[in-house]
Length: 67
Image (cartoon, rainbow, N blue to C red; front, top):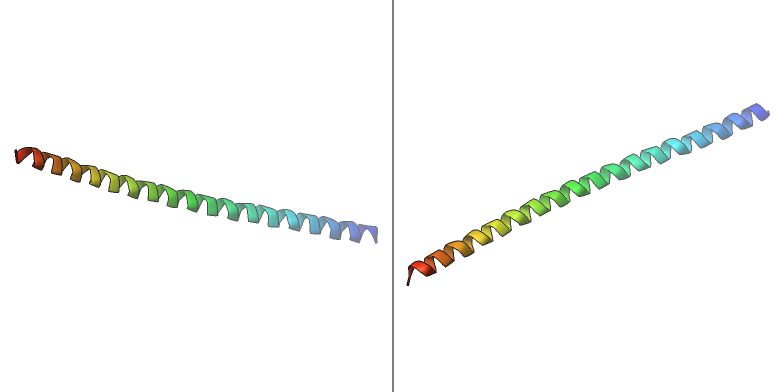
């Protein structure tokens, strides 16, 4: 009887460990996706800033040429 109780307890504990590992892996995958999305957002913002800077530079050159 003690053997079966020990076995059941061991299986219950090991199942919790597997679930914890699965939860941790899922959490890590979500964090990775969030990081990738953040990186894409930063790249898009940098492109927009570069475009805005080019427009400012072009306008400055046009204004300088009008004089």
